[in-house]
Image (cartoon, rainbow, N blue to C red; front, side, top):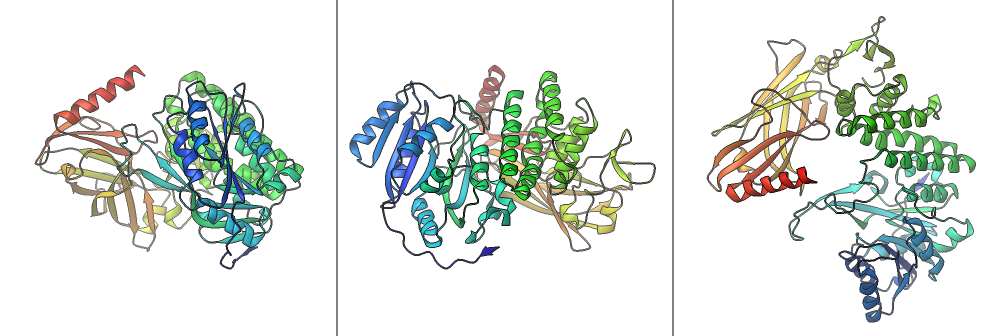
Length: 546
């Protein structure tokens, strides 16, 4: 049971060691180290472990250490091939009561260490955990304009709390990041908790399982304590972003299986079941959403690996998972070869969409398709409407005066009609910073050409949005009082998803490109003026070359 903790008292200073690991990251390691050194008196030492870099990172770290006695540099004589070994080196060298980890391309926000230390000391916690901010850095980011930021698992840190044993809050298994947390060093040593050595992708999944299996006392705080930089345009993608080969999925499922075995060996059956359910809700959906982007060989390998992984589950392991992940898992188990990839992609999207056609078994039970009657959708079709994976198609035809956005909402076994579609709030959201640039509301009417669908239309002023990438977001409202936030499937066809040039008072001309995202959702790219059009052309050429 969670306890409502009192305000934390001030912790003694100089209690924390921050371990910074890096390899060939000369462009970012200075920012990471300085963000740790600037944390104030709570930090006793910063240990930077250079994993035998060849890009000058070692020299940068030595110069930083010469200017600050709190920084120690450890240079490995051979590259370890992964993140686990340098973190273990940092644990071994730590002389402080508490330790935390920082990657060389991320930073600690001001006050992070103090907030974690105060919580750990005030509540006698083995671990203190706070919010991780996931910051997307676009390729052309200038360092000054706002970036799109999302909170990693904010529901776990919505209020201060103390968890006496992890089994009392199984959702903790969802947070397998080793960063954003403060560990009592003696706790790690008493339980011989270390990272897997060498090249071991997703080493933090195994490390976190060892931590939870040792039944620590955990203090949770709502403070932002870590900034995770996501650089999708980096020359060398991080392990979690580089999913182009089936070996990445093989490594991920292997780490998840090892984590479950660790929890089961410790008698933590509830946590093990929660870990399996989470693997359906998060990684399975993420990889299934990308299957159409991969080649046939990858798809076959991924499908075979996934079936082998899912066959290790007990029937009860599927129940705690959210419905979309369960359905995807059952479709994979029911077919020995990749199938229905467009529908799997839509169901795997966030929010989930369930594209027609819909099917029923002989007894009237809603099923995935007539030839897979064992994949039931009963558990997917629950009320209220806010959790139902509805399907909305979107058509956007750019015009000089006013662009018409047409939406079509599909029926789903009578559930939509029962709720009574009323209206839809339309937003175009800037992907870089998350702000809404345009809002419209339109009413739903029954489609005269299709009794199983409802349509709504809105006029949108695209030149008013300005340059950038804009995602379409919808909030559906129903007569029974329920609401549903979703995206819209980008409809293809004559005159759709093609470039257009519109007049713009501000820029003269505006290049408009509606397109379907990886998950099939409608989005827009807008480039103002001739210079903007030239930039779009250069980026497209670069993508083709890459």
